[in-house]
Image (cartoon, rainbow, N blue to C red):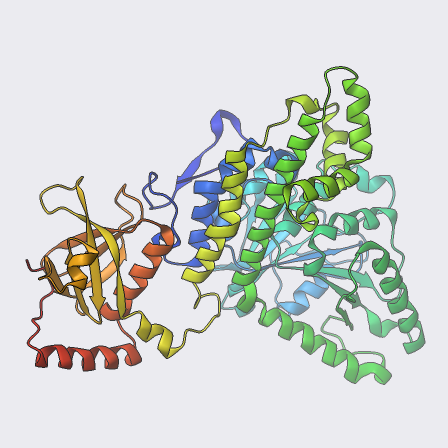
Length: 558
């Protein structure tokens, strides 16, 4: 499995995970949900995105390091709204390398603030050169951007919060031509960070709520991630209570026109710095707002995995809808009058999305905002719709399989990691299982034999057929699993293979699907490394087996 660096000459560098590249993807091959997500993307999704030009139109390829990154909080606001001082307040007053505070635009680049063993400032070119960095994908923005990007590492001993969360400080958004004169695509950079962020904090100055056209553009760019957006009305103690209400109402009125959701955005209203609050009338309220914000940030890591999965599923659904959209444009581009037809389709793309959704059965909410396509076409000039990639039945089936089978399978396999508690009854039910598995022949590593296996608590037996087991024929082999270790055999080329490690030797079995592999592996692990409830059940059943004269061995007999 490879994760390729997007862009770059000569195909870029790669990094590989430990799973055999020829194995079909299965959640049980991975030790945690994030690794399984990264593996699913590399084995199944990356090629589909590349074919459908998703990485050109919508989002860059995913890095494994991005999937496994700590939760990130993106700070966005106009210049002199107090973003850097606000960030310093969140860090408990700790100064971080590269920090500049002042009434003028002081932060002239993007700065990621994260935890480390020591306190240091890492230049952008160095920070993005490592594929294990969550910022490796920023190389696509070029050298001009990397000169305006850095990673500020702060010792987690000084600031424990950075051991769980990273922050990204952005340049203050300027008004007029100055915002357009940056040497890199500022909006695209904001979109990249917003896509990776777990939470986006929009900062407003409580005593000068003037929203420039450039800031409006940035807020519109954040619209696809409106569920992550929270508001901060900073410097709120510098105005009277009446003025503050007017400011709050103005911000909410404006944002209500941008974010098309019925829910009101959470707004933290206070002054976030180390000075005393100057409005005694609202002191208790503003102190409570400070505490609420700090609490919400502290619990952010708890839901990080669920947000990561939600973002991944949304990306999958967008990818499928994007493929269908380009295919529709391709199929409806005539040979004669092509230019006129393409102009019409560009103008009416929103209407076509409804038509495609109805024809394909894909929910309309899965389709990407028309503005994304308009921005791409404006940037890349004339695009010949007739040359857009086709969506074959095979490709559609591949997307459907990933969305409808692979993702639910991943969630089910890592149920406990996702926060779903398994009951004692669920765990004890794992101690009994029956079904066909392939067993690697003892005489040949390439030869696999189909056998019917019966797991009865810690005793595993196998038969030639299901009928043999039903008729109580002597099993071909029996072993006790209580002292063995069951893992995914990721070193084998054979898909869905499981390894049983005993004191005598290793045994290799293989299921016929990812779901079946997951079920068998969980059962093996439940009886080989049981919790207290399962262990007690196994003990009682073993006593019953012993009374009936059953043997005990850690190796297959027979």
